[in-house]
Image (cartoon, rainbow, N blue to C red):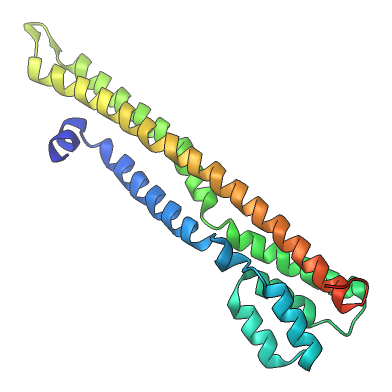
Length: 202
């Protein structure tokens, strides 16, 4: 690997940094976007039972807010449980917007890496071409410089594509996962509002 990096020249270093950042973001988001972390199953039933048995307490709201992303949304709604249905729904929507923003954290960076990696690879290709042209001399070609220029061009192009392809794939997968989780949380929040206001049985 060290010999490949040396052969690829200095343009490979931004690509290495981009690959490290992409892997870090992918791992962090895959762990953070697990369903049991974002919207645990059975949370709605648990919240409704606790509400019916003891009403809304500050301790209950604090636990909900720190339990999960869906818990934050439920807590925002229950803080306005004595208000009208519309006020409770608005507070849930506000909390839902903040939660949706948190779920998409770092995805813009991942998308940027996916877009910029091929360009960084192209930069390496250009640098390699400059090396190749620099190997031309009146007395003939410099084989070592010619080979080095070809290595820079090819390795950087390949690395740029290798980074971009999985980054794009994971970006789209994570974005789709966020959309699914957001829809699920919206449905759960609507159920909570309707149950609390007696418009629906759980």
